[in-house]
Image (tube, rainbow, N blue to C red; front, side, top):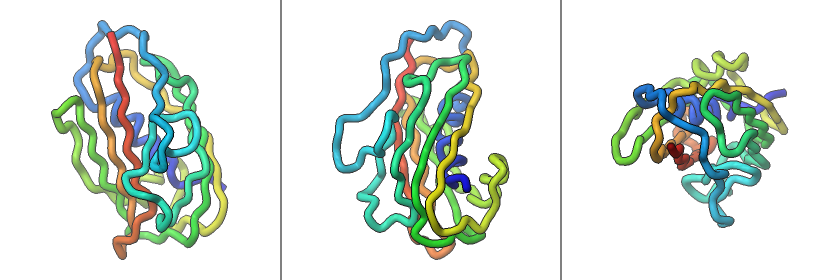
Length: 173
């Protein structure tokens, strides 16, 4: 079984990668991305934070690892994640995605989760239980330098939270 957060992480990283205009002068001198240890940090080698304490989320994320960390423009980013669904996730679930470049909002949209996960060979319903996945995302060479903030709030049609993740990534010159 594969974890349904595949599209969430792919959306997080691909949104950062393609959300702003192309610039050809980006170089890869980034520093590893991670957050200070706190109760909202997602376990693993990643810059993810939960938006809220995740105790009541339908998805319990056990780990998320990025390779390479930091992501490098023009290279393939490998995302490995594992977690557990406390119940079945049905058709009608939504994901609210927001991407900012500095203070500029690039993307703010709601999408049907079940439609989005088809892009990564999954389909609804997503069954209760343990799942894991590994997904590769090709990052474009031209990612404009700057600070990107990404938020993905995922919930059922009854408005019950599946998970809510946020990340901040800085690409340098």
